[in-house]
Length: 212
Image (cartoon, rainbow, N blue to C red; front, side, top):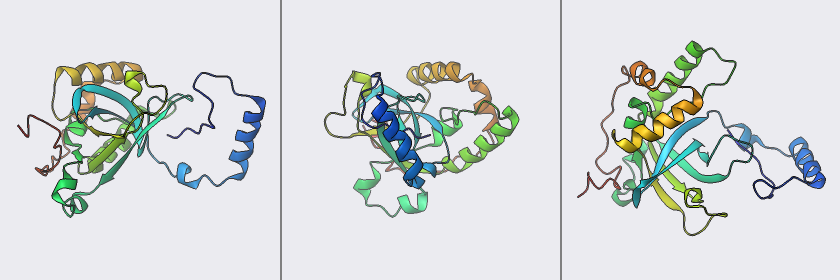
């Protein structure tokens, strides 16, 4: 999912001139990089220096804070295969996180379009998860909306992901599932067949329980 803003503050009325500008731009500009976005994923990121702060977000390499038209672009994520990850310098590998628990625990989802049958979407989503479970992600948030920042402030923040079942996971995922009408237990059940790849010991370095 992608959303294009032309500079108005969230919540402010859009002027006639701006509407014309947006319409003209959409009709004449080549937006292939945006149009090539092919999946809408819903996940959770944690600040690497403070895992108690949880940010729900919509991500497909570009990360927004909601699926609404007024959504704010708050971050980016890169995902790579284990083969590429293993070629990185040791210090660089510490900046990347695994997706195994997110996939197997039903934390990571692809919200279903309204007119697509559930059985069809489940099959497509599960196939996508079979690929994502193998990948490593590197995520930075540029805008800390959870603390009330009106604009992006400070340096980009390295983000982590949920790695195991905790109260924070359950609360965040249950709230998200209610919003999207998702049965969380079913996500776990239909992904049981997905194999758990071995996670490189250098990844998820921000997890203090792993690196005392």
